[in-house]
Length: 109
Image (tube, rainbow, N blue to C red; front, side, top):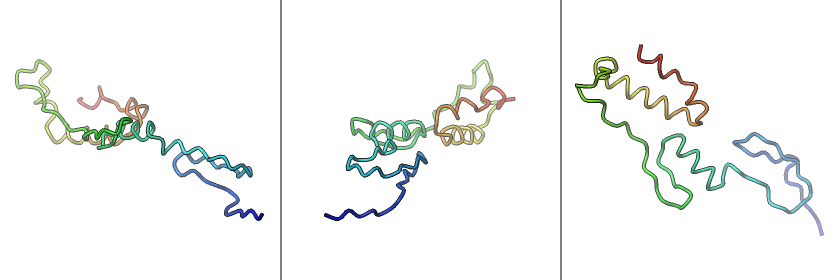
């Protein structure tokens, strides 16, 4: 029998982890392709995706703002274009740690 070595190093694209071939026939882990992790990334980025059960989850959409009688006067402080821009930048961040770093309180002043 002959064994062919196609590549000396196998690289996993998203995680950036390089795996040396060990001669084993066991499959390589590809955590970026697991259903659970695909669903997490889709949920964190707010795009349309399949959840773990295979159901289609619609994309996140910006909701209506406060009424005119809001005590914080949101309609006066933040216009619709600013709200849309903040919404897009927030959901574009992806991971929850990146979202937590956004200055929410300072963005209105």
